[in-house]
Image (cartoon, rainbow, N blue to C red):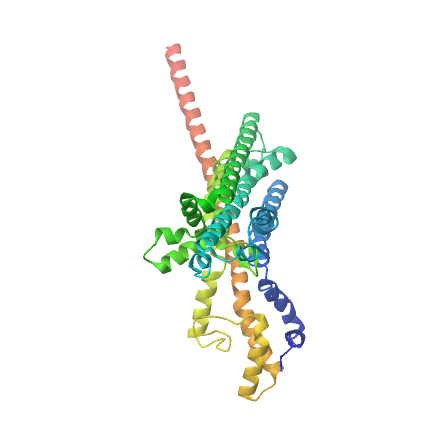
Length: 423
């Protein structure tokens, strides 16, 4: 008899039900989008809000983090699935249109497909993926848009004033014009690059199936690891995972992939550092301290931490009912069946077994989120703010010492001249 999962969830204590909702959302069939949107927005926005140094600082942080998360976690699917998939697959048969969401590696190795169909699918997949470069380019642009936003709303371009480091809040018109001009120039650059990418994608979609050169280009876009590590399947697979521009297969639909996430982090990094440099030394150094850590964590998500955490639990003999031989953990939908199996094995109630294995599942699923919030969020945000203030104070003291030394030298020279004149 099939066990009703929703009924078993209802038997959980009230304090566990929000956790069940969180896990359900993580595994709810939206690829990386929903879980990563909540995790990364919470990790990046809430801690920064706690350590906000001014209204301007809080406003631009809120604008940037929410816009970034919406852009990165939802726009790839909207553009890929709703726009470019429809336009670029019109000439394909219905079966081939349905296969466009399959991983490129599967299509290339599919012996049932003719070479013509393989070439057509691969080049059109590459065209769709190349069109989605709009996302990392928009991510790059957001930081310059943020600078314009703060300049327009708060009339501030100097990071020392935005972060409330400089108490006199003096703004130089020349600096404001520099920040404004730089922002517009970089927005034009991003638009130009996207126009080129869009043109290249149209070429792949239209001419790719009949061109060996464009077919090779398409494979490089979709499975770059296979080209770089031809004799090492493991390295090729890892490289493909994090650097392929191919979409993920989300139940037949195009979803956000790890490779696209990497592209967004890299594109965003260029934008972060460039826009920060425009606003001053302290902004640049703060980004230099924080972004590599956060960027790496965003790309890998909680995977590395979760894998290590499960390894520790398994070695300690904890959560043994849900951690498999290769550290695999059953989904929430699979827990009822496992609970039934354990109940028969132990001669116990299904509800009791379900509650027990749910606790184990909850620990494994929520620990990475707690870690990301505590360490990657609060700790990193707090440290970056602390060291920025420390550097600013140190620089200011050094400037005051230089000013005092110059004043002393000027006074000494003046005293010497007066003595000579008197004599």
